[in-house]
Structure formats: C-alpha cells, structure tokens
Image 1 (cartoon, one colour):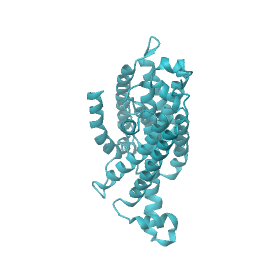
Image 2: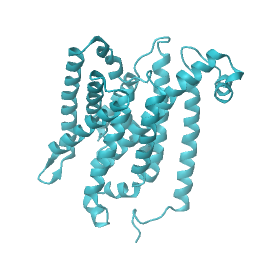
Image 3: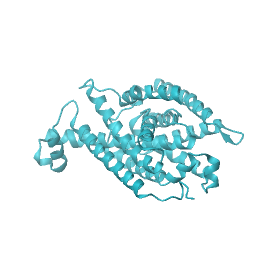
Image 4: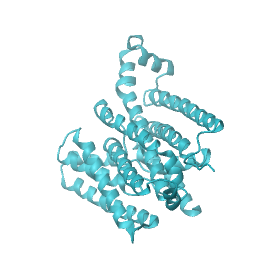
Length: 337
C-alpha cells in the first residue's frame, strides 16, 4: 500500500497543482500591476507597462514613479508576503496547530529587536539582516526550550511562551527606542510594518535568500504531509522528525528575520494565508507550498495598496492593515479550533 510519502503525483494531482499555480500566478501578475499603477498619483496600466518596457516612451516623472519608487515596493511586498506565508505554513505543520505563525510565536519580535539594535549601533544595511536573523533565531530557540518538557514538545505551551516572550521583546524594543536618539524614535512607523523604505540594495540580499529558503522548505513537502499525521507515524515511515524540525525552525527563523529587517513587523500573514489555502486546496503540502507563497504575495500586495490609498496622499502602515484583517480571523480560529 502506497503512503503519502511514497505515492507519486497522480495525473489528477499534477493537473490540479499546475492549474492552481497558473491561476495564482495570473492573480499575482494582476496584483503587481495594480500595485504599480495605484497610488497617490494614479498611472494608467498601459503607461505602467510602457515604463517597464521602454523608458523613452513615457514622461520622465512617470518612469521615476513606476521604476524607482513603486516597482521596488511591489517586489518587496512579493518577497515579504511569500516568506511570511511559507514560514507560517511550516510552523503550523510542525506544531500541528493552525494558530502557529512567526508573529504569534514571537519570532518577528526577536527579528525586530535585532534590527533595532543594528540601527542603534549603525551596523549598516548588510549586517542589519544578520542581526535580525540572530534575534529571530534566538527567540525560536528560547520558545522551543521553554515548551520542551520531559522530552516532549507541548504545542500549547509553545504558543503561550511565544506570546509572552514576544511581549517581553516588544517592551525591550520600546525601551531601546526611548533611550536612543530622535532618529531611532522614527522607527515607530517601521515597527508597525512599512514597505515605503524599499530599496534595491536590501532586495538584492533578502530576495534570493527568501526564495531559496522557501524552495528548500517546499522540497520537503512529502515529509510535512507525514508529520502532519503525527510524529510517531512519520518516524515509522522513515522521516527523521527531529532533524526535520530543527532544520525547519532554523530556516523559518531565517526567513522571518530577513523580511522583518526590511519591512518591520507585518503580522497575521503567516496565519491567514496558509489557513485559507488549506481550506481551498486541501492539506497536501505539495500544493500548499506554492499556493501559500503566491497567495501571500498577492495578499500583502493588495494590503499595501490599501495602506497607500485609504488616506492618500498620506499612508498608513501595512502592518495595521494586515492586523485589521487578521485579528478577526485569529479570534475565529480561537473560537472554533
């Protein structure tokens, strides 16, 4: 009898996977065009496409807005949304809990603390992501140690530990901001999640690492399918559960730390998107990984469009938009799960 680990893709599964990815990619392309076109200065879609293809065919102002300002922000939204969704999906699979995600487990707060310290010490744009990863990884390790008792990992204790440790780190962040100079106090807007500071330099570092890390995690989709049925069953079917969890936690922390270093705290993306994709596409992680990655990018793109247009020409932090959408869903999960 074939198991989920050994059973190959059937033609139906392959067609379903291909169709899902194609439809989501079409939605992603549409969301990217909307994100580049909509803003305090509306630019028609044909001019957006012309600016991307031939800069001489549009006014210089239009080219600057599209290529220099909005396109990096759109690409940042894609990377951050994809990374947070994949990290949330992995944490939910390993912890057998749909409430697990980087924000709730405090990993985002650890990454934020590392970034704030790097900003305070003026470490520079290349060391800031590393400091953010160190912070997120430290929190993941601390939460894991607190929840690991008598050789077992209590997922409910882990969630509570993540919330409490995240709250403590947030308090430390506020203290650091209060003690340092005025420039650092301007980090309050960034703390709420903000893509306005998107730049090509950071994208060159963060984008490829997040993409490669996401592909690495998705390559273990069959193992996550087995782990979702129970650690003991997965072990009996040949999965090294301990090694898989350790590697997955490290990579999820890396993804979270990197995206936090450029976007600030954007909560609930890793909670909402994997859960919705699980409802729409089923529990197979071979489909959930690409679906969650693309859907997360679409979600954050559209949330950023709302953040830029609701009170245009001013804007609100994108983290406030994702929180406004995610908090009701979080309450719903608490009530029903």
